[in-house]
Amino acid sequence: MTKFRKIEDLNFAKEIYDISIDPLSRKFSKDTRKFSFNSHLKWLIKIISSKKNDIFIFENQNKIVGFIILKKKIKFNYLSWAVDPIHRGNGFGKKMLKLFIKKYQKKYTAEIKENNYISQELCLKCGFKFFKKKGKFKIYCTS
Image (cartoon, rainbow, N blue to C red; front, side):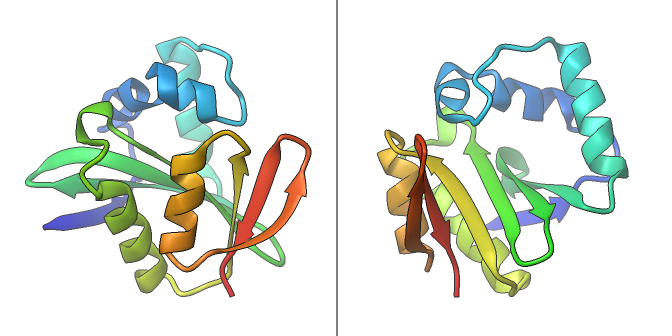
């Protein structure tokens, strides 16, 4: 069973870092630059201590399969996510996104790179609708 929890400390920093530095994760991230573990820790501390951002890990059989970052804005809440490379292709992205949206029923937006067809399809399967194209990104929103 897939479950999730909000991260409030640095206990899972290494696991989140390992998923984040995966070449495919970097390729489809808004910021594609590589970064050190120390930079990652600073970023994670910012997220954890912010009232406007949260990070949630998703576990299956006590193993982290991915995470979702929530950035709270006035009109929408922006979501971004990544799935551990060894768990990709097994439906965990869909499970974690659907579970998250069901638990926290709000309006969500996702900015997906135009060449990230898997995440675009994931958005559609999870109830997002294509909204508009913005530069190299496609914007998807829930209702």
